[in-house]
Image (tube, rainbow, N blue to C red; front, side):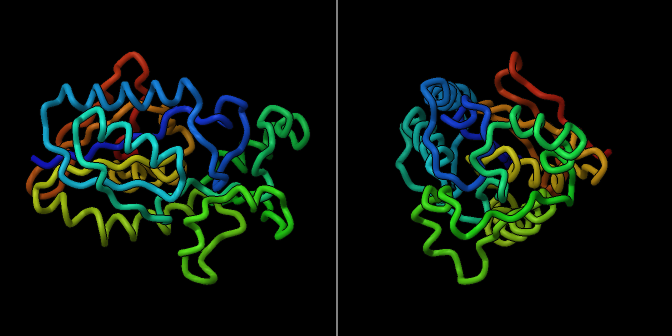
Length: 239
């Protein structure tokens, strides 16, 4: 049975500071580096082959992946895709979450942060955070870079990429590792676990805790679990 291993990057510097990060290319915190190392160790304990690896254009996910590969004594060979980037938080980028909640109210804050199809206001072209985006973004096709995104928008780039580029390896019974982000993985899990638009707001993805998904020959999910049970979050399935 093929396995898909999903890992949200370890805690980033802006995660630690409780800021909306989105496409800003921040590094892992000290805790995040340790989470990435532990992810690698937990995966190594599975004694399975990692045949193909994918990550985003953002260094926190790339560094998490490379750390995992190093912990498993594997070659640093992997695929990067902007489609796996974190959700773009628009004008919320860089803002402290608690301060933002107080300013706009809890109801609006929840809509921007957890709704399925309500994006924050777009980021302005002269916003200082634009200069902090990944230099790899220069390779994204003209007109494809968003100025804000809802989770639905993120879903609409993650899932076609998964269907076209990643799923084929699982069909060939290969084990695939994806190191990505809270919202790009929420989007992928929405599709894989058949989560409704109404329930997806309840799905949380912990940092640096590998989620193992096992498929049967028909690509139906047979088993799934987090490797670090002490930090596991509830997985919503077919709701």
